[in-house]
Image 1 (cartoon, rainbow, N blue to C red):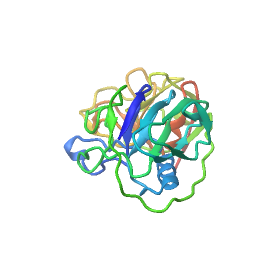
Image 2: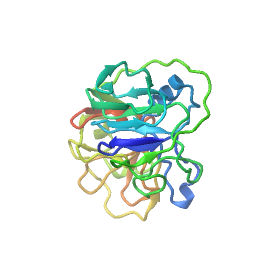
Image 3: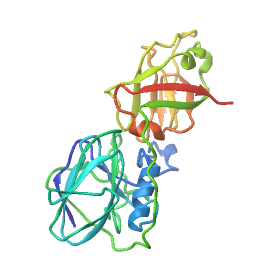
Amino acid sequence: MITVVRAGPQTTVQDQGRPGYAHLGVPRSGALDVPALRRANALVGNPPGAAALETTLMGCALRFERPARVAVTGAPAVVRVDRQRVDPGVIEVGAGSVLDVGRASRGVRSYVAVRGGIDVEPVLGSRSTDTLSGLGPPRLTDGMTLPIGDTAGDRGTAEEVEIADDVELGVWLGPRDDWFRAEQLFANAYRVSPMSNRVGCRLSGAALTRVREGELPPEGVVLGAIQVPADGQPLIFLADHPTTGGYPVIGVVADVTPLAQARPGSTVRFRELH
């Protein structure tokens, strides 16, 4: 068992999500930075999709009942065991010791994997916390306990990926790009809004000009869909996005992974894909 000493804001259990249930109104959910999750699991010998903890900006602190092998990846942060600074790669934590993952120095989300994985009860095949629907385990709170599994393989190796302050995202236009002056999406730079979360990344900048009036009935939306509300400011749907939406979607981002580590104020630019 792990006891949560300091939960931190928005710390959740995440694996690779629960794809295949959009027709039931269930988002995919899962880690926002899947490569970072896989790296953490590789370092401790877990399967790529084992459940780990996803922290947001301020990290978390955990007390371990038994000795454990832990890895921290994603956003770089100072990691301590019993107040002693350690390498955030592979960490051997003794019984009764407290692992503290501090504030992210760059990026947003760090991933804490424990050998054996976080063994909470799966829902629809996944242990991920879905902050929109409420499926899966609750967000971490101080004092709660988390079970650890007892299966893992050989320890692997993994390399960290550099976290960029400026993000360029490839976009496929459609299905409602004809509702806007779509060229504006690629001509302007945007900033990540502080109102962003696991549901979506809100952007601020030059409003997109709408050339078609009227409203849409709710349509299906996917990971990476760029929805344009009435104010013209793009919103990119992330892992916990709803499965339908009523605002027009101007395009779809091919890979939203960089947005997992994009802090408020980071610059976002779009590049059209063909």
